[in-house]
Image (cartoon, rainbow over the protein chains, first blue to last red):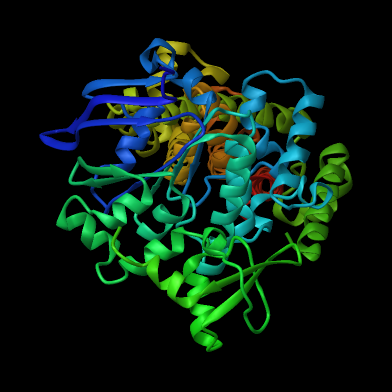
Length: 314
Length: 247
């Protein structure tokens, strides 16, 4: 069997006499997104920081692609791992291009390769290279700063990206967009991501797998649907928000598999719409069935009954 | 600095240059302050020579104080250097509170007469402002920024040189400015132990009751102080803009 990209084995961290992380075992497969969710003080950030040795574990082993991370010097290890934090941490005295180029420069890339990479990344994040390259971070909006922060973390094409509340400082609308952009970019690059958040909705939206931390312990690790269906502890249930489970489940699923032949009135919804959004549209427009189309081609219809069934306990 | 401020400083610089190059032309202005028939302009040593020596002494002292104080402040802000902090702070404080005249008196038996005791006094006296502002500059950096720098794989040295010092530079320059301006005034006492400074003119004026000497020595020193202060302000503004924190 192939080694997982990241493997934490019995990892613990004690500060003074307080166990911040206790005996956590976790595997993250290559190309997967793991979101680590918990309240503040749950040890989730410390867990993340042990992967790039910003914090040294008190016990246990962390491996990347099968190799013990203690085998390389911390600063060398970190250059191979992207790292993005809340409030972006951009260098205020460096331009956008210089900020993105930090790790490639440390790795000794030649100038032309760095310039090409900077422009490619700015393009990837929908920022015009000519307009943004030479700006200082202070001249950017919060959302732009955050995008540059993630672009910088991805600059040296690291196989792994660690993110600590990367969208925490953004307003809800920009935050949604940033999450969608991250997913799209991750699908393209295949980067393995570990993302720490206190927001369960964000964890459900972004994670292929979700790890829930509570007072230093890993209490559950599951895919989003399994987590919603069967929270392992009352704490996980509380994080999920209790009453909305049916809607959380619907938000994870898309209408594509529910399409059946038959007529339906009104404007079609596009394939790929979430069950939750489709149900909302059905209720709002008082249509018991909605037409579904892909790229303007009508696929069929989806009925409200079929949508509602998706909210049932699995 | 405002446009008028800049113009005023330019005019002051021109006036100072004119006086130092041809002091006799200003003899008429100082005449009323010289008693009897005594010369209104000090001629024992050319004023230009004294000014250059004075500036050199202060420049060397400020440079040495900067190297020491920045070194202490950097050491004190490293994780391994926490123990240095109380010692460095005590030394800098002592240097500032110990009167320079007393330092001169203590240094002469060791170094003899000449510029060296003055240099020691100026260096000790100049440590504190640079040390304190550098410390403030380094400790005031955004922790998230340092975290990001570490997380990206910068070594301790790279972080210091590429991130910490450039961002603390405006504060460091402010400290050096204070130190240089204080040093400029303090250096005059060096002439009591035979250092060649503008103090020579002032002391000579005091000994002979020639107010004209005291005035010209004092005015040249204060003009120099104002101009150096202005020059550092311009440097600081440039550095602050480079940090991107202020525009």
